[in-house]
Image 1 (cartoon, rainbow, N blue to C red):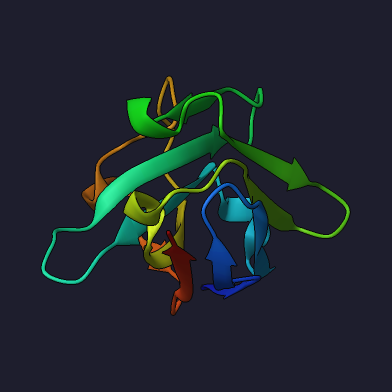
Image 2 (cartoon, rainbow, N blue to C red):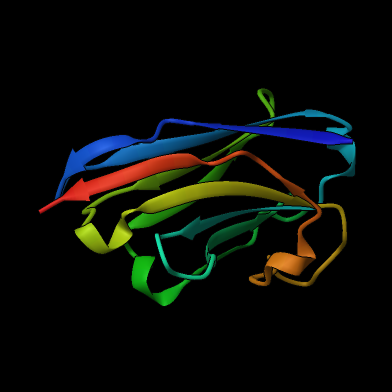
Length: 126
């Protein structure tokens, strides 16, 4: 079993930065990839960024490329999402997810992840 706890959400203005953190505990040695997803009210959950723990490859949705960075702190078993140049379209609940399956690149499909956190709210005002 793997437990994931997100933190770092909040209310910011357009153009600001925010850093989300996902703390993993339990059988973390089984994790092969970690992803960040988000869900805005009335919309489907969408992939934001992913990181393969073996090799460190990353993958981003087009709308956040160049603005968001996913990274991992091996010692702390945390996976962070640095978000810069935020805009109101980034407003959503952000979820951390972990996959125990091997993929050639970080998966963007939610079904590839078998552990999920409770989410943290990010609100960007214009």
